[in-house]
Image 1: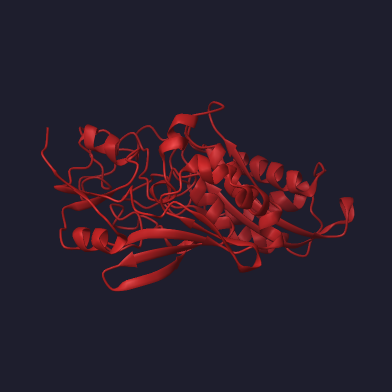
Image 2: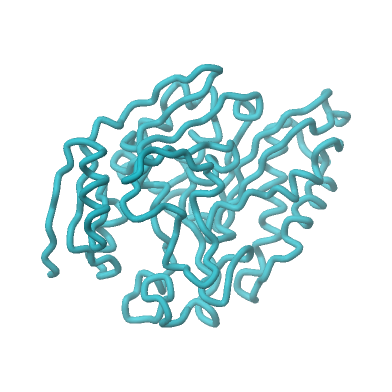
Length: 334
């Protein structure tokens, strides 16, 4: 067992200062991901700074129907919060699709966004993994690849990001409030996570010592008419094969309705939540039907890289995206 130093922070500034001063320190919230990695030997920090008791566990209303979510709000509490269920149903549904009830009762908003990949090779310290040990190689390439990324991957890493919540927040254009040694800043959710490139060990754009304190969502008609569809191996406690967060605004009714605006983000396909902007561009201004959705998804996945093991994902994305938009339109898409 590796010894480590435990520090319980009394406020956010103290927590930031403690981690920023020690390159071997990590923040600890609920621990549903970090503690697993400590047990497996994936993470070996010399110091953990406990932020779980910081007063950041409130969901507060913002002007215009928005919400400000504290980093320590538990997943269960966020999923059932009236402001979230009414104004941002995609967020509520994404949370309820994640993990198990017991884990949702423990896991926090900030921790969920910063969880690391569930790639089997990343979690197995006996195998080479560039994300765990830079320069050692990627065992997933040529190995078990059913869950591997098809978009934005690199020769260094083909792992996917596991969070359901992050996908919904990317679609709804959330902002992540971050406190660091140089003060507070806001990061668009779509810019929080990185594609692997040559440095897959870096999951996010955060600097060492920066702490997520809040997530902010702006109210909108798209957010009100939003949903989340997750395709997985079993009905619960399984990570996404693919997932879709969608928001939709239509002009008109029924089969004559035209897409005024749309937001799409995909999970299970990349190193980060994948905002499907090319697909959105195809759909805007067109009648919403199955052919339009198929063309949109094909446009977004044109540069997808697949193997025999994950070649199912583009077709599965077409089905899941069609299902999400059909649910929002309130009709089958012929």
